[in-house]
Amino acid sequence: MTTDLPQNLSSDPNINPVHDIVDVQTTDCCIVGGGPAGAVLALLLARQGISVMLLEAHKDFDRDFRGDTIHPSVMEIMEELGLSDRLLELPHAKMRQIRFKTPQDTVTLADFSHLKTRYPYITMLPQVKFLEFITQEAQKYPSFHLVMGANVQELIAENGVIQGVRYRGGGGWHEVRAILTVGADGRHSRLRHLGEFESIETSPPMDILWFRLPRQPEDPEGGMGRFGQGKIIAMLDRGDEWQVAYVIPKGGYQKLRAEGLEELKKSVVEVVPEFQQRIENLHDWSQVAFLSVESSRVKRWYRPGLLLLGDAAHIMSPVGGVGINYAIQDAVVAANVLSKPLKNGQVQLSDLAKVQRQRELPTRIIQAFQTFIQKRVFAPVLTSNNTFVPPAFLRLPILRDLPARLIAFGVFPSHVKT
Image (cartoon, rainbow, N blue to C red; front, side, top):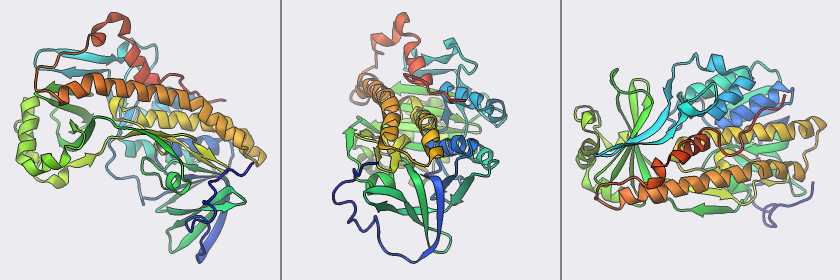
């Protein structure tokens, strides 16, 4: 591979510093980040006998995720792996439409029931359960090794090529040497920072507050959006709870905090009156998580010996809940393209470029779609107290299936090569 690291990278103290190393391990592929992209890629490689080490910073998967949607594209990938039926044995809900209510009407943004697939719905499954399921499946293969509590801090670079990582955990510093290192460590990617990847950013006109409220047995399954009085609220089915997303204008969080929690609760009930009693379960701001909505992608997803996937390569807006699914499709393409080079013991820069080439256009198209919805649907609601009138394009029969297909499958669905 040619040397293609930034000129100042090799001298960065985070690249090749000196530590007392507890041990040095070798593997074909070191994946940093045990989220959907990293876990699925590890499984796909391990199934082919490729040595893979998955490093996850947390000590377990049991934490609060906000992405619990598995779209038809991923269910078809699970079916190709022979895992879909077992996955659906886990407790889950099904969202067959994405709808939102206004004070005057109910509008369907996407209806998945018309799609030609065994899975004409979005599967609402806690991400922690999905990750446990995938990693347990991967552990059936002797070439897979999972390390929890591995806090990756440094890249190893030699002659301009990334040769692995150093992480802290388990009593000290550890070193992993690999033919290929994959950064699948999310929207705040450490590897993206260490590799000095350049990003192209957009500024969505909104941020989100997340909190949970009890869900009653008579409540609808799946989810629902509510528009009204300059407010947007989305409700996602998480079994005995609603995961509630309260959308606010970009930069409006401090103003909302200053107005107080009671004002927030009042605003929620104005849009969702059936939460009148349940909102009292919200006692403190500590129950409310703030998400600064971002949308960006790095210009190039790779450097010699290093590849970024999922949110590390492209941060998605929450619109359509497609982030997990695009991350998993990245993993499928990466496995399809890189399995043979990894088996041969050498991954060329052209191999990494091929992964980006196959995944960049679908990413750019879905981000453009998200931006369009944010500007044409969300922004008018958030910036006006007038009655919301849905854009005409949402009612055109000719466009009925387009948003559903784009959200369900993306532009060019990825499939596992057998």
